[in-house]
Image (cartoon, rainbow, N blue to C red; front, side):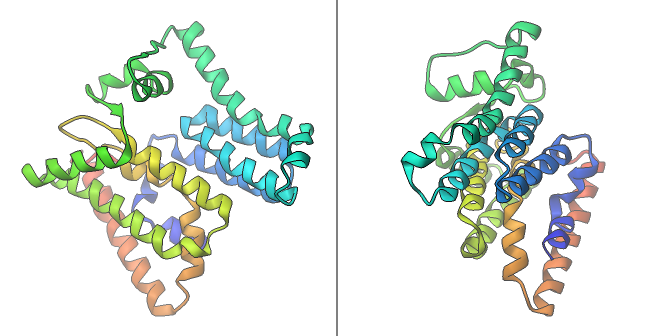
Length: 260
């Protein structure tokens, strides 16, 4: 059921669009698979490839630490001494580090800004050329970015912003519903993805451009949804809403009325 819910999610059509989500999700899922199998080297290697695919891949390091700690029965000393496992897991941040080095020296495309913590994170993780797509964008605290988006929608309602907010709030509702069905490592990953996604503000015109697509990376919610929704009528309703939502979003995307 998890695969079916994932496949009929309203945002599932981006897997066939020219975005990097499909490759990232393949690598992220494989990373969790090897974490569950306690193969720390392969988990780290694939997690590092995920970090090379999208910056959010660095967040896989957090659930990886938890799984290693859990493997050692939450004993700090034995966990810290397991240097072989740590060597494998540190391939995850190494993947992002290699990309940053290539950007800085190979492309000359990094201009760190030290004016604030948020600006520093943005200037390191996001290429300056991203402003060619959206001229004004930055990281801020998630609640600040959400407040700005809600305020803008109240002042100047726009159907594109409505779609972004509706899908974002819908994600939060689903996360609350399936929370108890998720492993702790899944919760860590999903929450970190959600916080980063809601913190990414893309200016006064389209403040949350890409929010639903970024939240789609938090795939463990579909694992919880598959366990939570058991009755046939509940599944039919979920599939119906998901399929209709996918059709509507695909139509807006094809007509260039909405950017996921």
